[in-house]
Image (cartoon, rainbow, N blue to C red):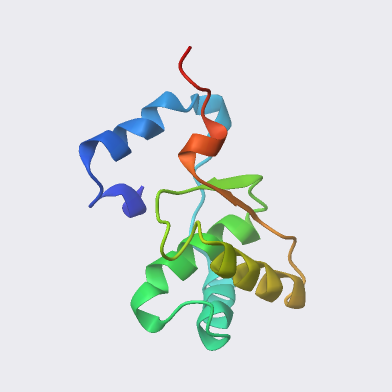
Amino acid sequence: MLELEGAPAEVRGTLEKVPSSYREDVEFTEEASHLAEQYLHSGVVGEASRLDAQHIATATVHRTDVLVSWNFKHVVNLDRIRGYNSVNLREGYPMLEIRSPQEVLPYDE
């Protein structure tokens, strides 16, 4: 939930729309730390985006089905997604699905 601390209230509230059965709390581990360093070393994101790299790495090492984010600059960005997944494959991890909330929440009828 650290990623949502500085987000606007309406963005933080979006999480409440996701059924708890679809959410999983995971921990940042030494394995995820190593993978995040690989993202930084490979230039997927810069040092200023270390927390984003850690977020992606944590989801990857825990084999998350889909990571949902409002961060279009460093996370939900086609070039970055390709970069993260390139590193993931090189390091022996599966590709990670990264989507925006609009892509995974049902439309209001």
